[in-house]
Image (cartoon, rainbow, N blue to C red; front, side, top):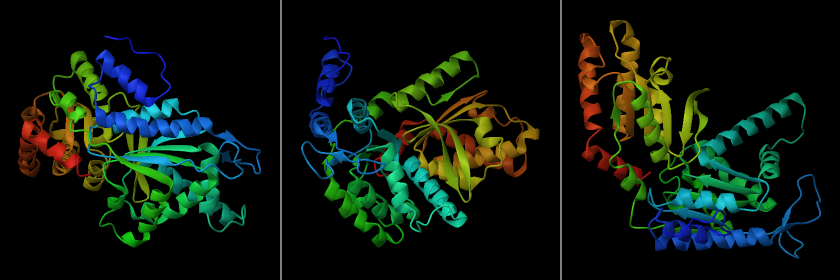
Length: 387
């Protein structure tokens, strides 16, 4: 096998090197997308900053006198085809000093926080700018001239209503956008409330990025993850090591970061999130005052959830048991893949079966066993491909 070079100047070269080394399977569809990403890299390397005409400055094309209109890229296709991997390769090679890689929902949460702060400044008399979007866009561009979004998916009406205005400003400033998604631009926010307010963003997107499909016939993530153990017991060092290995396999090396999911004036803290995978402890989810709506929000945002250190629950843990029942129900109803490390087998988690909780926990046990089956995994995979 050929050694993998420490540095390659293009995404295509890195893909070929990894395939030659045996780390990756050669994939023509991935190479075609890599060529598109390399074209953007070439444009970025050929661009140079002009003389600053404002505090922000501009990104100018070679020899030009107008903001450089470097077209970005929107890559969509089924899950597990390598979209995130390709974007990560691109991001590392991008020569732009000011660049940001983020999950789309995290980025939009940041945008809404900035808009709120801008409105507070207006109330305090610290600014006369009534429209918060232009200064927020300017601040975002000052921090990142290149934006790379993973899992571009519009589900929130507040996001849908603001995207066209926000990105009109960002694209006018010269921002370059790279995004991955499971859906084509025309299907973003499909059937969403007041979708007509969102439609202008689709036209804006097509005017500023090239759209390409990654239609590899192989779901590589499913190939790697199909045989991973999803319920591990007892709670010991070997189980912790196995859960850690499963997490790295599922996230495919993507960096995990804490995130906060907005929830009716408060937030749900996620200790570790990478793409559409989240990692919690039992204490995080079931020893805090969370309800069914919180678990549904988690199930809607993530398609794979890890819950570690589930203890055996005695009669004094009635509230925790009820939350655990609600958690499993939410994840099951959304076909979320659940990885658990627990003190005991599912049918022994609740040490005493009494009343309604005992009856409901029988359903939880049944679901925990079913969620380990090949049939459930197939359903999970089918659901992921439609998100």
